[in-house]
Image (cartoon, rainbow, N blue to C red; front, side):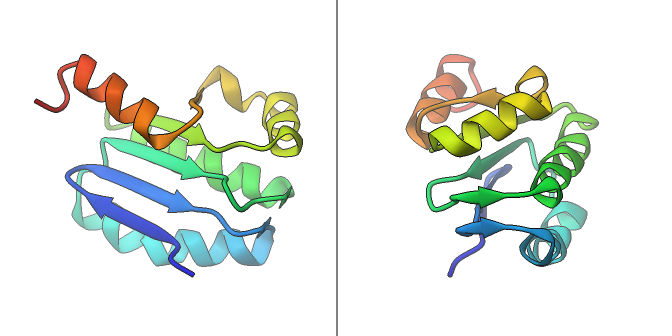
Length: 117
């Protein structure tokens, strides 16, 4: 399964069905090189396949948020199921990260904001 994509300052994490400690560590370590070698301006967490998430998933999201936000970037979540939405809401993630329905909605906002022409 493809875990992430990077292009032109945009990093997309394709999260697994179960986002537990094991999966969170694999995703984090697999993308460290991208963070170290590039300026990630936008980070998108795609929850399309995710049906379970524990506190390790929250830790992954908040830790990656700090890395992007500290450099002036933005972080989004997309394709969030009702179950995952409740977890994200209860954790307070939506105070710092914006939820969009699809990646295309984010791209529209980026274009409207002058990020892409």
